[in-house]
Image 1 (cartoon, rainbow, N blue to C red):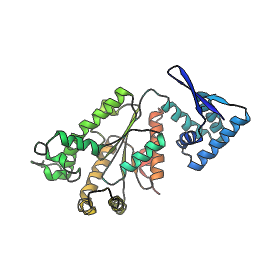
Image 2 (cartoon, one colour):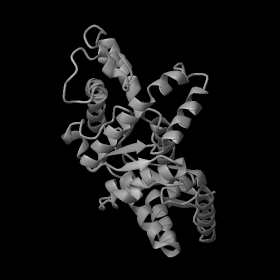
Image 3 (cartoon, rainbow, N blue to C red):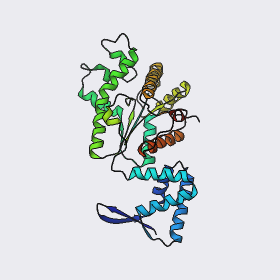
Image 4 (tube, rainbow, N blue to C red):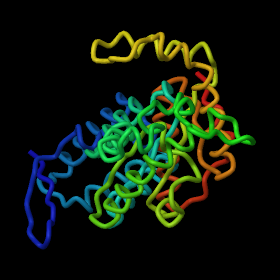
Length: 309
């Protein structure tokens, strides 16, 4: 058996070499699951061939890095960037926004699993807390959905589209909770993924979002029919209380909020990912994270925007 030696607060301890943990780390270099496990098995064999029974985490990382460099230098670069991210003292703060039905929740869960993160917070849950704090009489907008909040505006503005005005009013309230979570994440050094329709570029305080360890991504579903299909799939789940009719009756307003989110993302140079295929979406999100947190300049937004199957 190969033991991996770790140093935690000056204390050494050992745990068995895990092909699963290493394969998950390798997958962040854009490898498929089969490729990652094949490389992991080969690395284990080479360690055994070299009569290595114990190896430090750092030496194991260097061993993997040298192996990848020999195999494919581009993979080695991505692996090193991810290793630097994981050893950083700064927490990862990842915000995933998008209109209702585009898949922010599903993508957040998949991304957290891929990155090995434990903390996922939905803005819908933040909204529920805000509803307990703010009465319906005081602020009826937050007690509606983001896409039909305009129905509760008491005095609509003349020059602003009423749907967007309602959406903005809704987001403004929830944004207070979002910023509080980011502040705590920074203070406590806790990595977190925050997802939901209320994650809007340009609305979160610049001192919180314009950090090397913070990244905001906007998901879309460009094709209208595909967007509708997502609601059909969602409403088949037994735990979903809201009916399909509710979403279909408000589909045009949901699309309007998506247009607003895209416009905001363009203004604030936020990565936009057309969530067609979840595997491709996850790969693009991970690439954005590595580029952002790895200190390299991002690829052009167009290469991210055109996420085609």
